Length: 108
Image (cartoon, rainbow, N blue to C red; front, side):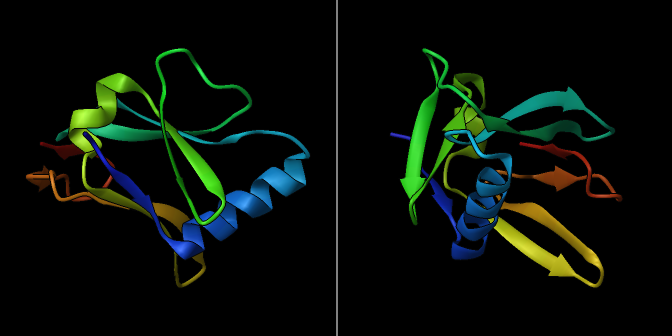
């Protein structure tokens, strides 16, 4: 069974955004072919669950994953980090074999 974990800081950010939006069930994660290394992460806020979504709950939030992304994301942690003036979700993905120089895409 695939597993995806959610850091405390990611959960806090998901809560903040859902509170600001006033609605939503959680974060939706998928991947798409992109960039020079192969795939990129796609993030959106889920207002409803798709029939084939796989969901992971931790720290009071839910992350919905598209089934075609499960194998690539298995064992990953969704984190929310601050680097200088930038804040963003980061995936600590043990399946990544290579990343492009700009960090926008990865291969497994």
